[in-house]
Length: 109
Image 1: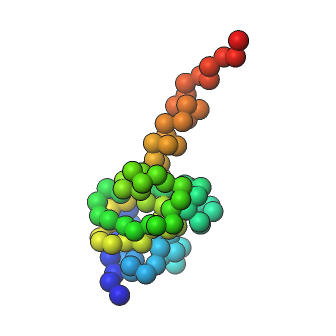
Image 2: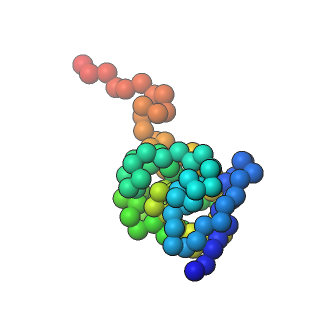
């Protein structure tokens, strides 16, 4: 079983995670405050931007294929290498939402 170091950018926190466990499960065991909700790869609450490294996350249904290359759902993601993750970063499908951008909704005439 191969272990990898997962470093959280800007926090000074890092954990060792095996290829057989999820990043979130290890965070919980280590007392790392990682946000989460559904734990089934749908809600995106546990999203983190992959700054460096690779993960496998075949059950991360909340991400498109393109998003899954740049973002990890820590509840589903298992490391394939050492990682640097930026927690609390969300994929464009969420960040690009008009309500999140502050743009007013079009008026109904």
